[in-house]
Length: 282
Image 1 (cartoon, rainbow, N blue to C red):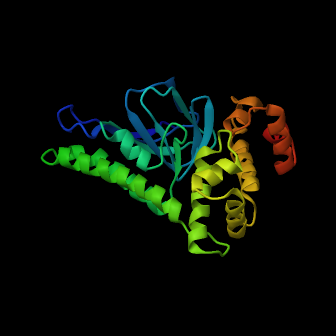
Image 2 (image 1 turned 180 degrees about the horizontal axis):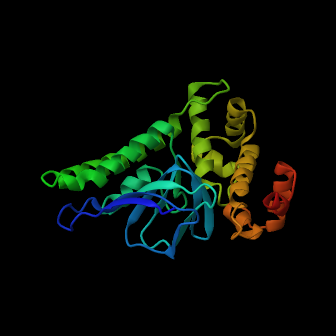
Image 3 (image 1 turned 135 degrees about the vertical axis):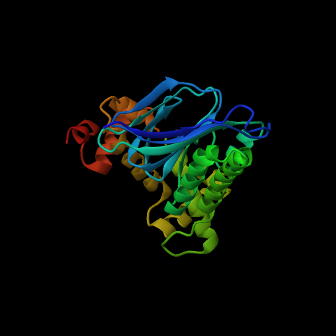
């Protein structure tokens, strides 16, 4: 079944301004295994996944990306992404650049070490509608330039709000609102940094808290210490990546923050009850 794809690329003069400039946008229902790359771009490009799943690879790391998540490709990043063979994703994208683009993305918590983000259903729906507005802007030439810039600014503003919401989310489990806010920030930090080597001390430093106090807040809110949460999250992501026959166990290990494949295999078996290879063959 062929993919369904809609795109819009404004004429070079249609979107003036140096602070932020839209290059193109679009949406597609991908076919199984549909891929792009490895390659690089000279601009920023954000993909937002509406349905299905796939993988995104950059900087030697592979991320499992599912509905409600998105990923950022930065200028000169060598990137690769591929739709799942069983549940291929439907995604929308917008490509842009400008003097303030990197600053705006940093405010949204998106950088070289954190290219993947997670949205609530409401946030995802709002961002998707903004890209749809961009795609449809070409049908209204009189106001096209204003509509495109307005939607692009609103999209980046939505991503900044998403990051703020993640910092302020109240989690179940009791505790003070301030403590829950710290834990929400910790969870967001883990979700975007699990693929690299990190420690509980680093997590506490990110929150500006003492390590023991941060661990106590985390356990009060979620019932497990941060080290255990990080382990479980990494193994869940590893399970998704092991579905990809093209990735070796060593590559999966590296993609979830383990330099030593043997240590990864031991921890995977501890959490999942079987070896990575046995899990893949099930």
